[in-house]
Length: 352
Ligand SMILES: NC(=O)c1ccc[n+]([C@@H]2O[C@H](COP(=O)([O-])OP(=O)(O)OC[C@H]3O[C@@H](n4cnc5c(N)ncnc54)[C@H](O)[C@@H]3O)[C@@H](O)[C@H]2O)c1
Image 1 (cartoon, rainbow, N blue to C red):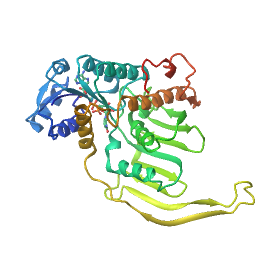
Image 2: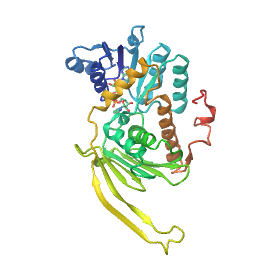
Image 3: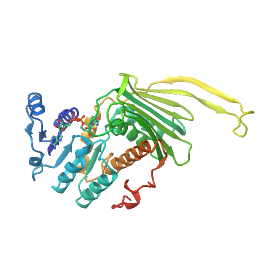
Image 4: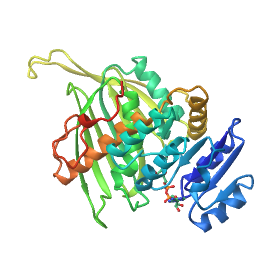
């Protein structure tokens, strides 16, 4: 396979390295408009050919195009690549709007091309293990998902902190809580330095109101925290991505209530048992993701993280913008009330 990679900023070089490592990849051609990025990477990757104009990657001998540019350019580059008959890998978040995402999904489907959205965390050993534990029922019924992703982060020029950081946690939540239907979003944020929010909190509401998800993202924190708590009625789990060896800890603890009829008479008992840390696979997530992309093309099947997964995350991000603009108003994910936001009812494409 011949792969073209567009965008060699912070993330692009990781993609170059991982695609070069794939057996089925014969040639990687990498592209950036910035000469200094190319010159720096030429020394690091002598086997890679570099170009400044992405249009030279849209010729017939390329099989797939990988897009690792800022979010506001994803749709344009992805559309041109699909129109040129290429399978595409698009970095998270997939697009800047659900309308754009839907257009790309339709285009790819009409040409039998694959869209891979890089929700990298789904390919980590830790998230695979979390999914396995939840599917096995180890935690019992899940009652909340609570995530914190904060540090002194890189301010983005085109998206706020939710669009930049929350796609990671949202994609993990959607994957591990696949059977739960998110119905609404509330979000609040502050913009201390320019018009885009640098700190935000977002909540996701679910159909039965028996589960809740909360996300705290911040580019202006003095400390770096990457932690998710997933609480089940049987056991609770903490995923700390900054831990080297024990990223996941499972706590055999919880609350038992003798009667739910009257709180006054109820006997509340706390269980605090053992904690253990399961072994997790150590393979680099991007390596697994690149393999999945190549295999889905070879096997003519949808990848684990496809365009629809990308669209579902963009729908939540779009709703969070609307909620922030309206002081934390609850935005229904299935029924946006204002015209300026794309309505899922307008779908151009049948997902079923
Ligand atoms: N999956 C992950 O874990 C992860 C991590 C970091 C970033 N990302 C995503 O990767 C994307 C890029 O992020 P980044 O932090 O590397 O950004 P960046 O600004 O550091 O790099 C983007 C690069 O794209 C180049 N570029 C822009 N338009 C171009 C064009 N038309 N042709 C060629 N080159 C072009 C820029 O010159 C720049 O070098 C974003 O979507 C971001 O959200 C994903």
